Image 1 (tube, rainbow, N blue to C red):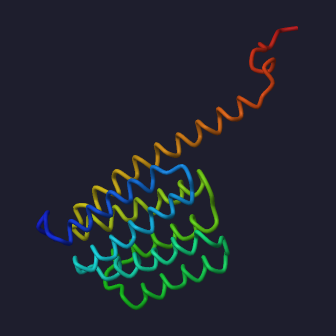
Image 2 (tube, one colour):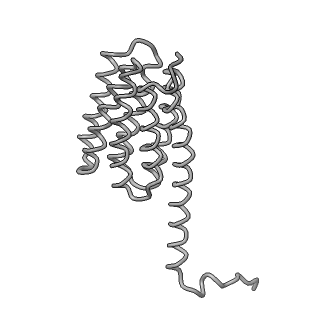
Image 3 (cartoon, helix red, strand yellow):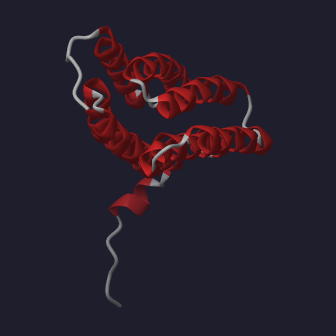
Length: 185
């Protein structure tokens, strides 16, 4: 489905793009979730205007999820949000592709509530790929660009976090351990 690249619906997709990239650039989990909240609001409006109501509903649930994840890491809250997404799917899904944003939202929920740091971002990458597929099917220009860039930025941030972890570990090792070379006896 093709849409005017400069329609208000697509401009909202571009706004989601900016907020989404900003989100995945964050190494701080709290700032990551705050930016994600803004992205989800823009996405909800964007998908509503494009007529993709499962993606709209999933994005609204994601707004609530992102805000709640700032205040709790409760398994029960996470499972409730997953259950809401499944219920939305049962009520709204018309084709198999309508499940893509709902499954993405479920993986994002589990990531935000149950994981931190690198593992959280790895599971979010799975959700990103599901959103990418949804956006291609929906005809969301900004959303497609967003998910491609988010995948790249998220991988870069994962690498930066891994590098920081490696550097911190090296800084905590005794100096002689770093310079010792094993010798044959």
